[in-house]
Amino acid sequence: MRVKSNWQNLLEILAENARKYPDKVFIIYGRKKITFKQLDNLSSWLAGGFERAGISPGDKISLWLYNCPEFVIAYFAGLKAGACIVPINDMLKPQEVKHIIEDSRSKLLITSIDKVETALSFEAQVPSLEGVISFPDARTFYKVGSLYRIMKKKQPPSRIYSPGPEDTASIIYTSGTTGKPKGACLTHRNFISNVSDCVYAINSSRRETIICILPLFHSFAFTVCLLIPLYVAGKTVIMRSLSPFKRVLRTVFNNRVSVFVGVPSLFNILKQAKVPWFLRLPLVRKINPVRVCISGAAALPKETIYAFEKRTKIPLIEGYGLTEASPVVSLNPLRGRRKPGSVGLPLRSVQVKISPVQPKEGVGELLVKGPNVMKEYFNMPLETAETIKGGWLYTGDLASIDEDGYIYIVGRKKEMINVRGFNVYPREVEDVLYMHPDVKEVAVVGMPHPHKGEVPVAFIVLKQGRNVSTKDILSFLRNNLALYKVPFRIEFRNMLPKNATGKILKYVLAREVQK
Image (cartoon, rainbow, N blue to C red):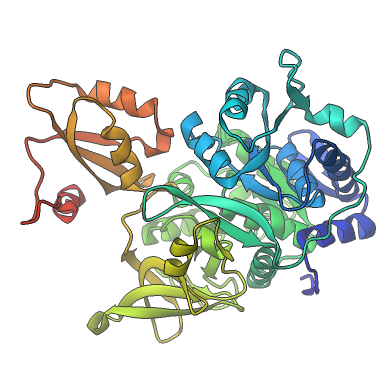
């Protein structure tokens, strides 16, 4: 295990690895391999391009990218230019992306060539946005910069910026209580402390190879799949997608992946799938390098843990976190007792407690304190004050803590719906549905799903005399929302249950879909 250092920022870790292990491969992407020294050089050359494009310390750079080495290069290049990085979910619809770019006041947008035309429309609509850079080279769009042409010039910036530990490294957007995305400002100290704790918890070392099949724009994948191997000078194997899954399993074997990171829906599939021969030989480490599987981003059913471990003989440990905590809060210990149904013990520098809501049952809102807790919500002082009080992060999740300190998540104080690790706030979906000319009233609640964790269900009351089909509603939603936010089921009603003041009683609808 790498000894915790006094690193002040993420750039210091990269620089030290490039100096100590210049020829060691850090990133594997198909047949492409990038060493620590190459990443250091490429990000410096791109940072020079950012500087020439007018980026200065404190500016924001948005990354609207799928999983690829260019995401990592652009991330560190932005930090070297003094910028704060805004990763954007590449499954969002244009209007959702535009909101994030506008709200974060991003000055530059890095994207892939398939999104260039949409990106240019943002430049015309968002006052802060001054340029778009793509890869590969978008030759048909003369206004778009080329990421690789910039790097080929091999011109670093006039100076490499050195962020302080409390400087914001990333603004990661997450849905909030108003239904609008909120930008969680995560500092270099937040990330480094959280990574250091994770490394200690899973006993990671230079020999570590972690597969990154989860999206890098998500805080869980970014911290666990990218920053952990960076911290220990290990490797990350980045994959663009899970499909076909046979290719994922071949990649695990061929690259000797030691830590497999996924979400519950993936392990639900694996517990029933035909297990490859190399995953059935846990004692023969030369054949099967996978030493542990980690599940995060959503609740993991007990039966999934039992069935998966029985089939593979590989420990599957569950954790808990949220973007505002950089994101890992707790993890079932790799060494020592694991309790299925629990999200484990808090990381070593993290404190947790519950604010009693139901004292008799020992259940309350989970509060978190530690160096991993975000600085603030970007440009939202009131929301920040509501979420962080006295240094404690109010998670909105209901939990209990047993006598051994293990945490059990029992529900959500918020109405958030967790679809395969992605947060969907009902208000977002409802606001879009209210845009439909035939919709009078709507309520969206979450329903359990065997593979996705939860899915949204929409209850709709149409305006008098209107006749709209489920197909029409779904088509409308798909044109205005990311696909994972689109309701799994649409139910038309003559009326919705309400209280005396006319407020829709969502809990009544939620009980219906729980049956």
